[in-house]
Length: 70
Image 1 (tube, rainbow, N blue to C red):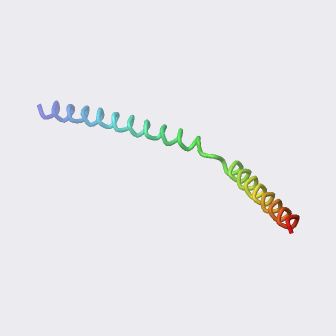
Image 2: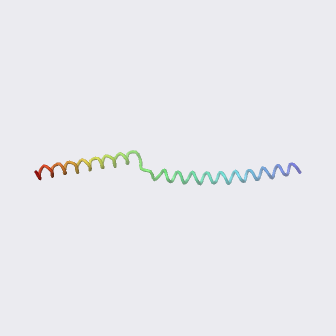
Image 3: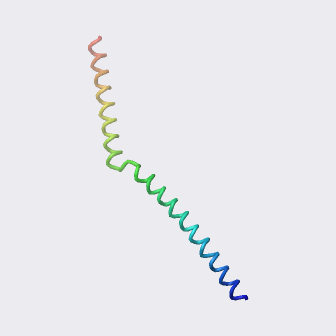
């Protein structure tokens, strides 16, 4: 009888471990999907350069307009 109880407990533990593993895998897939949506380093660099260039153009245009007004 003791062997039967031990085996039942082992099956229960294995089932619980499978459920926990499936939950962990599901969470891991979710994290992978979220990471895949993040911009790459090159994309962030391009956006930063474009923003800096746009700011420089606006600044130059403002300076030129101020000089023309005087």
